[in-house]
Length: 551
Image (cartoon, rainbow, N blue to C red; front, side, top):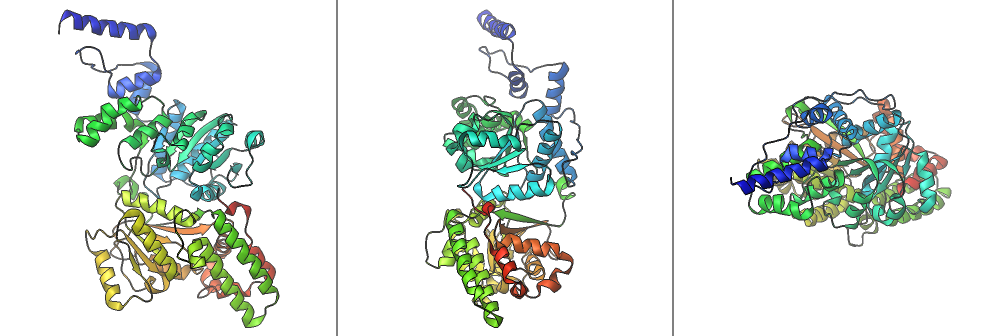
């Protein structure tokens, strides 16, 4: 090194000392170093006091304390969830954005609700804005009611939502406001005027393209803290990571151009292991990723983890649903005896078809994408499970819905999808089972009609079971689930039961839950028990409630 290079290095650091550095700059220097104008290498950063303590914890050299949940949280967190919730609170305390990237089914929602309840108890009165796909607005409402019933929650979506100054006034009464990515840029002008306690992005891969309106809007919202939830932090390439990190900790990964030069091109084009390691070191402290295969997580999980997936209707579905209910009300008023039972079962079937997909109800071979809240949510969940090479069984009681699902999933993911139904010949059925069960089969999805595939099959190659529509009999559903959850299964099985909020699907589920201890006797062998309800009870059961509708 010559005298000029030494002088350049001294001048660089003298200017840094005079100007001072922010805590964020100090973090960046500690985690990834700093580019100097000379060949003199940057050896590292030594810090004392609070910044030294923070760096030690971020780099894993010191532990952060695990926190108890607040009184407002009704539930028990598993040990790995306690660690996740405490980690979120730790980063929030230092004003740092965090990405909770747990595998699907590990409870990102409950860990987040525990954090919100803690903040509310600490007397932070400004509302939290939670942005999610329209397909999961209902799910967040239900989970909040279950785990944080004392928190006032507003769902800001649908045509009847408040706008402008009325919204700004309304949100002050709530602890959490749930909205959708579709409305994030549509209602941006008023959303950015509200002093949010925090902004949380669920399914944060929705902002992976930093140039979209919703990604720009998310970055521009004022927030006391920022949190991203996603099971797939990197879907296509490391560029996805820049967009999420720019939302969480603006400027931390540098400009998009600098990131492309330092990381994107070396990693994507050149497979540079050093650049990959530098990026992991830089982003690692802000991304918590746990997989179901992690031994510490496996020890916490039940062998069969059942969860309900609450979906919203699209406008088209809501319109069709209302028309069927109106027609049913007239038919019921003039029917009795056997005829009345037939009317009821026919109406129930029609309403379930509407909840599944308009194309199934109309039977018109019309286009499939963008018309069903359930199908949108299934597609998102399948995308996530394919990312981690999980495999799934998808049950529906309707053969025509199975065909729609098969076609849609094959076209969306470019993978063969098996479909077994009542008309499948035995030889072909046996062949499907054998192919799906074979090691390295490359067949991640198997659709089955409930009657044809609900018993007698061994499909332990799957570790997810989706009940796309519900056969209102717990024993029948459990038999179907047991295709995967049986002897020979080496993984924990996740069972996802789909329901449309604000519809008969949710109401019937509530009836069954209330009578769970005698459900099999009460419900019988199908849906016949519903025909015994009074006309008033049936009309209440079928009534479409406001929360059913998405954007």
